[in-house]
Length: 287
View (cartoon, rainbow, N blue to C red):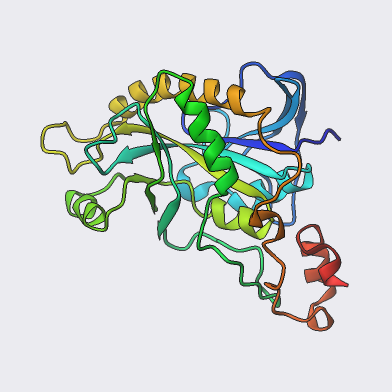
């Protein structure tokens, strides 16, 4: 089976990666179910990349239905160490205009009931999540967007809502009062699971609208989102081509050692089934 060091999770509108060569489609199952779709492995600018459409080809899965645990586990099993997530978002602040790109550095979790950890049923792990995005990857994404014609916002808080409905006006104004920058439906639990899998993770957030708080703009509609989405997809693909060769082969951030001193449960009390299920993630820690 082909391997890849870098993974790309495509969001709404980004269902394929032009420029990938030497393609191999990998279909797999994991201890946490099947991923959103087959994973396409190929070469982009000479670098092995694994591409996974988050919502499945044809956009079959709503944000709540996305099998995030299976997606992250599958990418980990293919050797992925760094994930670039592409996500469509609404702007909560005037300076972030539709078609701008945001590289967020913080998250607020407003999801409900999405499985957000690999470690349960007899295994307890507490990883640090103070900085939810890899700082090295964030810097490279900012640099990549600056080389395009798009405006980039370095940093910002991403509110992750459950969906699939858009916000009420009251909710949108509440998030603005918190100082949040953008709102979307997909960065969580991906970011939490990537951290537990010791994978670097960063989001290229593509602003499509002003959510519903802005009095001078129409309410959010699917047509509006899709129209801007199509323009953002081209920019996202350009940014990915620019940064893919710059992602370091040797990681020096804390993401790679996120489980160090985080596993609370003693291996002696872990069941055989738990050890088998989590061997890929825990490695020698289950011995």
